[in-house]
Image (tube, rainbow, N blue to C red):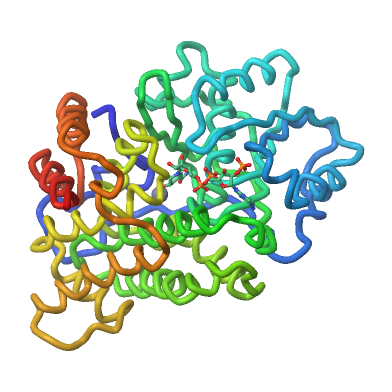
Length: 406
Ligand code: NZQ
Ligand code: ZN
């Protein structure tokens, strides 16, 4: 199976193929050091080694407008730094390969990503590709990870993906309209600096994307079958409740520090694997969403907000116990029969995305049958296995997408 999202956290050997109500065996380790709080970017100089040649990577220039670039440069005085800017949202393979060439020529020894998920993911790819002997795209398609990846760290500017504290990266290739992920313990950031004040300058559209994305990261690790994992479930609900409750306070033009801090930490905890040990996972909403970005260019968070209500509707029977748990413990929906609670919970989830200003139907983006057919065709061709226990079939994918047409 080539297409295996987040391989290291949902290794299918650990899946309960015969459904039992038992926590799966797990091994858990997360080596990333988090430095959290106001003014922490200045600590960069203490966290880095002076001896290494550092490549500082960043995106389209937001860091030059909001003061983050200046803070990083000040902290890096006296260090040998090569800059590589221009990593785009949904980082592109061809752009990243330019950085790989520079690293090889200049003998770069450490990578410092300053940005959101795209910059951090792109930097993880650079870290792996520099040492790869062969066609670097195979890192994505064949999950070939070299033994010696460059070490990397990050200064996070956008809470959303959890990339600052996980071992995954998602890379796009515009030339072929593809988007694939890879994961390896070798690309965990050594450290990540999380200063909540970076949130002040994030445009509303990107804050909405980040809120939807982080909420759905929790959902993908929670909304499967109930196998008696109350600790993971209560942690997951705590993260989701925090995201739902802080969302309106974060979306305003001038959010307060506490809301930014709580949102930032919630987004990291949503995908740093703390809630996933031992539980079953279903990344099908992400898998389908990645195809929508690759084919139609939609923002990652938007694709998920479109797909998830469809996944919940089409897969409502196997997910029923957890949908009810979500309704009761996150959205405070307690009245009615089980089926009524399921309906109300699916509705509340979709309304949450709409409250962020995200339109949740494919038809809102003029996407129709041709794209749906192409996505189903791609999954078939790749032999993709989707959902907890592989229960989301290609027919389900088609039904999920068709349920998102007006
Ligand atoms: O390019 P710059 O100038 O940095 O501007 C960015 C970009 O335009 C801007 N931005 C970021 N911080 C800002 C800011 N603007 C003003 N002030 C700030 N403080 O926001 C825009 C979006 O940034 P991007 O990094 O693309 O957003 P995000 O963090 O949502 O990352 C999305 C990418 O991460 C992947 C997605 O597929 C997508 O490619 N994902 C990575 C995952 C992982 N590594 O575990 C999991 C996720 O599910 C996701 O798939
Ligand atoms: Zn995501």
